[in-house]
Image (tube, rainbow, N blue to C red):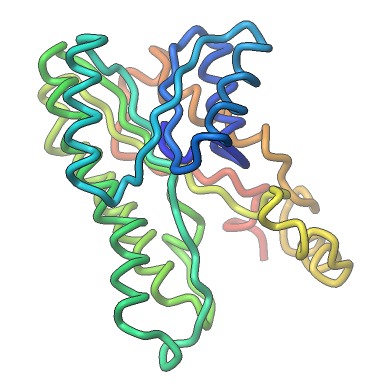
Length: 241
């Protein structure tokens, strides 16, 4: 589980552990990872930290070799790490664009490939990419993120087509507006709250724990014949006008 030490990622981790999974929690900050592991164990779940930067290909290679040696299998990959850089088209330095795409698309591509190699050995697996509603709609001043998340949606479909023959399903979850700690400033903005009330069918921000059900579904046997799909968890944002 990449990016599993806070926000939506931590809620997904706790839900997976509560459903019986042993979760490897990835992040860059060891202290945050240790807190996430403690939170999981306090709920009666099992987890272990996996500290690395997912854009570091050598570190990813080493980690997957370690997973193979230590556990012998990988059943589920959740690609949750993502970064956002809201700037207009003419205000982006190209290095910043490359860094965003590297984090939000290229690194998940590599992780999917590494995970699939392990899953093929066991004849089955679940890959779940956390995309965004920005993968299918767009707003001004967000082109790089929108392009990367759109690419992740397309990658989800492409890998579903390629990996299905090995018993591996590949699906995506597209979050809408969630009241995470990283969104604290705009969650407190009354104008945004009023706009969101009118703009979404459910009329409110999503609570972080509400993201987990979609991931649990895709990871479970209940979704054994579902692949190549992206499920929006957005309170009705994409269907409401």
